[in-house]
Length: 66
Image (cartoon, rainbow, N blue to C red; front, side, top):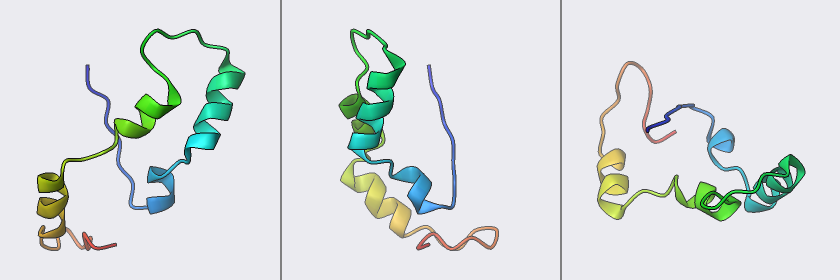
């Protein structure tokens, strides 16, 4: 299963671990796999993809360096 979303706002892509832990605790979920650290790690990219993303030219008026 895949879930994807996108934004140009960097702040929305970087939710801190403490906030996630608080929300997870308030939800009262008992999960065997998911936890806030897994959530944060799921957005990590390997270095070759980070390198590729920095070389993408301007597309549809959006600068990839923003």
